[in-house]
Image 1 (tube, protein in one colour):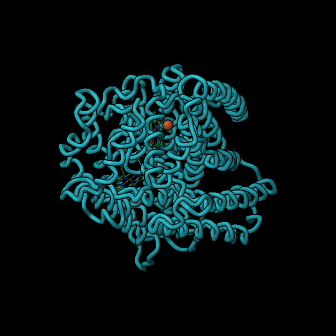
Image 2 (cartoon, chains in turn green, orange; image 1 turned 135 degrees about the horizontal axis):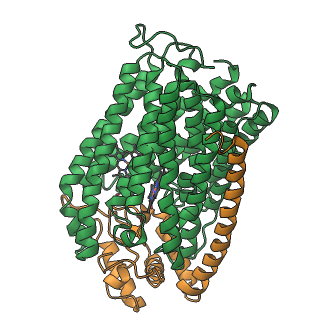
Image 3 (tube, helix red, strand yellow; image 1 turned 45 degrees about the vertical axis):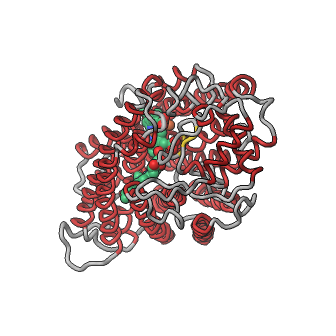
Length: 455
Length: 150
Ligand code: HEM
Ligand code: HEM
Ligand SMILES: [Fe+2]
């Protein structure tokens, strides 16, 4: 570790991994309720489990991004973080909010209360006080990292990363706007959801990947940074108007069917570019970095993001197709592989890279870590495939033939069993990963020296 | 590529192009906002009751089992067109009665069937919910869903 203050990242990463465990266990329980629907139905109904699953996902990814920023900004800016103290305060606020959310959902406390009760729009269910807490934490964060960057060296990586983080926070403000008109509600709801994952988060993803490539492959910074601008350019040029793919059937004007179809199809380009970029950098790179597991996660991230977001996104994005697949298991299939490939793998890549450095030790447990990659990636791909089959059958039976929803679902039981099996693999993989990162080990399996941060 | 484009060119294209698309998007947002308020939704019919119904829908996290106009969870049926499916879209009293009957029959407790939780709603809450769902069903959704199954 070159800079002392980088160690705040460790606290963020550990908290993120704890929530990751909660998230996959929640997913597993939700998957179990699909095959054994009477489970806990009176105490912990499906909707509560699902909120815990999706909310913990988003929160741990955010914690990971914040931690990654605190980890890489000192190295890029060549100076300590403006205030490590503020970084811990920010984390404390976020963890308090998270605990509040869990208790509020499970016990349905303060039902209907304007400040303390849950708000109940998908993914934005957090009570208002938690949203306000998130906003305060976000402002602290932006202040802290912006001050650090402004005082230090400015690179394309920190530039793009900061832009992504600022965008993330600004767009979050739309979570506070909930009009009575359902059409308007939906229109601006997507400002948070779509413009996050297909807009500003892509900036964060590309800059973290660029940082990892720089460190792991030793390719020339000029080349990496030029690519970075090209990639994030294609991401925003396509992703902003690509929001239209959510405006087809929610009360928007018909022109979104064309604008949405065309621009969201172009969204495949940045994901293809990130994948090509990663492989070309590794191929061209002269450095043989000892942290093989971090390289595997980085390449896995770029590849699975291309398939999950790019290919599975394109699969149902044209309005003629989406008319039939909208809101079926096809959407769930895409949501899973896209989130896993792009943002889960990204976080696990930076954790894998950073931990040996943060703890000032060798990257041990690499074989276990790589094993967990294959288990998780295999599990998520299998889950995506079976949900895609389920979604195809559902689309045909329900949307084309017009059969009743519940009876169609009964016919899909086999796929849901296989999804549950895939979920077991993912959960085991997640726990192996956490073990490999956190539990120390004496003997080395792959190599010896990676405590030296590259460059 | 070094000759074709320099880093600062790439950066300027990124900033300029993004700004360009943001401006277009904001313009279309304004237009769509007006279109939703004036054309595709029944603004005049957005009564207090409809607005209260939307809060009931939210406070009980219905969207984490059901979908509404195709958005939400996929565990339970689409409800954006449920009032059409039940044949009560133009019948406030019938909508209230049907919804009340449905809510009060839950949870079904049938072994192996997905369970909808039981809710102790007041009659007013059920009426509000029914009004909200009727209002949502009347939105112009470009003919989605393809059929009554939702
Ligand atoms: C990493 C990037 C992405 C992530 C994390 C992601 C995630 C998701 C999620 C979670 C949903 C469901 C939202 C809901 O609950 O209603 C969704 C919907 C959708 N996504 Fe993505 N997505 C990504 C990229 C893309 C791309 C690049 C495309 C197009 C090429 C795309 C096309 C779609 C479409 C068309 C829908 C709507 C599905 C429906 O009509 O039900 N996505 N996405
Ligand atoms: C143990 C593995 C997992 C299982 C069994 C599982 C299961 C589920 C289930 C049953 C749902 C609800 C679908 C519905 O509404 O009907 C869901 C939603 C969701 N899960 Fe998972 N999940 C798992 C892991 C993950 C992971 C690793 C991610 C992130 C990469 C993830 C992201 C999501 C998202 C984004 C949604 C909302 C999807 C949408 O609205 O389209 N899940 N999951
Ligand atoms: Fe999208």
